[in-house]
Image (cartoon, rainbow over all chains, first blue to last red; front, side, top):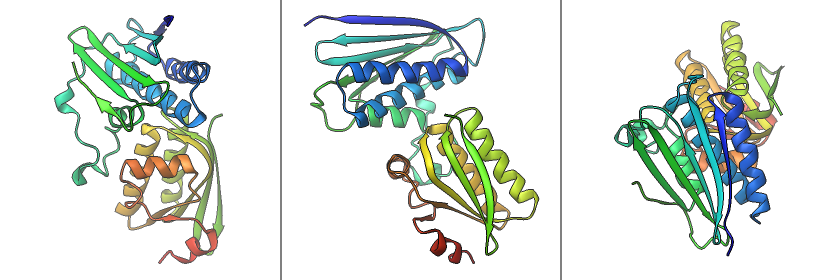
Length: 148
Length: 114
């Protein structure tokens, strides 16, 4: 099984968010996913890119977003890294809790976990790396999450 | 595709026809401005027609929630009409489907406003 990797270094802008989403959709289509799965993958990547640009790098023009797509075996693996101060996972509230339902933010990570088979979040003081995995043949039902 | 918004009046209810994407940036701003404009004119019975909204992200969901609570806090009502499957599914998994008053028939939706 051959491995393919495509990587990009992008500015901390809204254009990066749209570009990441579009590229994810193209990569997922080329990997053989059905339309609905393509939509889920591209939306998960969009949400991760929003986190990187908005919350991680805070639109800082001096900070970049790294985006990589890999075909590893039968998996599509997408890695997004920012240069912020590191996501504090303990501060992400459960968006499904009754007291949080009417909050206007805080659903991005939840949607990413809902749409991907595996989500690995690795925050450090020099940035957050989030790795999204989708099995091409969909062996997993629902999202699985593992934080590192 | 960017978002477009237009409004019309039916029996005292303002129907906002939205099309395109409600996402971080322009789409969310257009929705926010549309609702603020209606409230400033005293139009507090608002029906958001999402039939031509083909994509919404977490920021767009947040904007819908903000519109809902803003209108409600001013004594008005905001309801949703004609959800596409994608938007319906998103509201289901975020448990917002039961928070919003969701309609699929415009005439019945207009009549449902108090």
